Amino acid sequence: MNTQRILAHFQESADLKLKSAAALSQPISQAVELMFTALSNGNKILACGNGGSAADCQHFAAELVGRFERERFPLPALALTTDTSILTAVGNDYSYKDVFAKQVQAFGQAGDILLAISTSGNSANVLAAVESALEREMRVVALTGKDGGQLAKMLTDADVHINVPHSRTARIQEVHLVTIHCICDGIDVALFGGDEE
Ligand SMILES: O=C(CO)[C@@H](O)[C@H](O)[C@H](O)[C@H](O)COP(=O)(O)O
Ligand SMILES: [Zn+2]
Image 1 (spheres, rainbow, N blue to C red):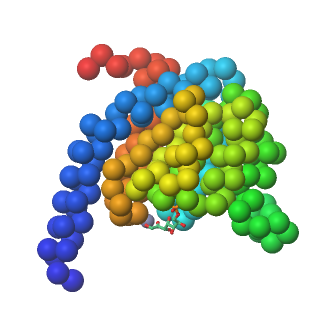
Image 2 (cartoon, rainbow, N blue to C red):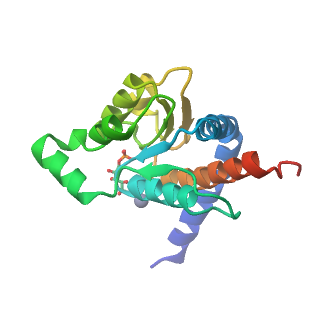
Image 3 (cartoon, protein in one colour):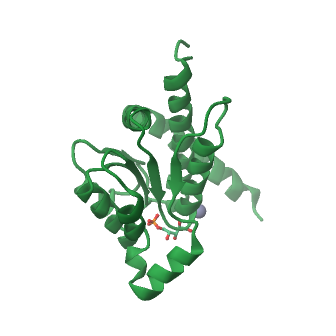
């Protein structure tokens, strides 16, 4: 394979990360505040997304329930992407659109947070989950890209929209991952301090 092509991937990813740092640091900080407040109040975080974003949900939940970089007590976060019996039963008996919404209806409570991840902002099952979350007075942290899609239009002022300024799905996902790590770090800093530097 032409190594120039590989170099171009790295260059584009690095350029977008720097551009996104400026554009997204404010909403990422708001997401940390929203999540930290919810966790402090005894609420939990549910996460949903498809494909690479499903993997991001699981990655995030693992870092909250297990740990990120500091030793601490487990924090309640649940990826709605992992139970194949629920996903296949709801997908088969209702529709794929309902696979996350049914779980939000089952587990979500007022004050919980839904982390909704969609690079297009247009995945029907993510939109249905957001709709169910808002109905239950949960707050939404949306990680999107492109123009934010339909998801952007559903959010209220009480929600947080982290929209990666790019059109390529892979690049957007790469920024979503560093965003997730910033949020995990921000929650640890809110718990234990270390924001001096
Ligand atoms: O990881 C990738 C592409 O990089 C894919 O698996 C991608 O996540 C899937 O096509 C998703 O279905 C895309 O959904 P969304 O990000 O538009 O909500
Ligand atoms: Zn991917």
